Image (tube, rainbow, N blue to C red; front, side, top):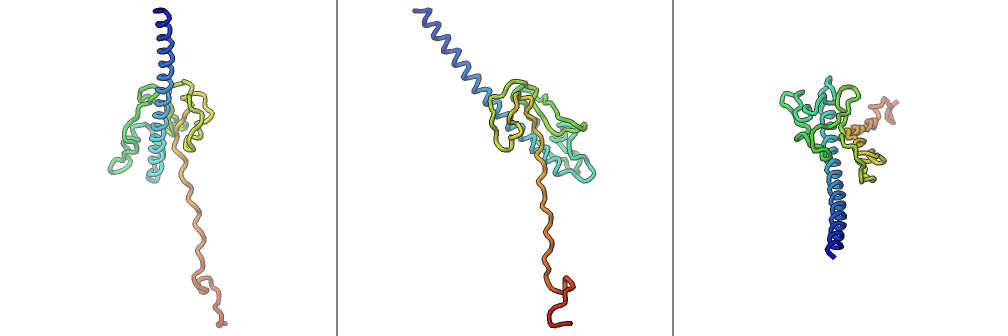
Length: 164
């Protein structure tokens, strides 16, 4: 009886451990999505607030913490967030032209989440956390100004009625 009790306790603890591991991984995924969004917002802020003639992407993550291109330094990111998957600040920087356009985690595990919110739609279909790249969203397109409506016939060199 003691052996059966020990076996039952072992099976119960093993299943509880698996449930805890899955819950922990889901929490880390949610935290990674939050932190990734913070970096997206910071990269977009850096780009949108760039003075004319200066690069619109940072060279280092420190540039997001304290942007010294202004007389009073501007923080685009409150703090250097830790990667919840690796528990470090050692992010993989996406630098296609030598300047940071995005970040991703070093963790190569398989994600539990397959469906994402619209802002994270680019992450759908990935098979590893290291494929979750967080880049600034493209700037909103400004609509072309509508042509001004004529205010008076004289404004368009149109003779008014009654005059020849």
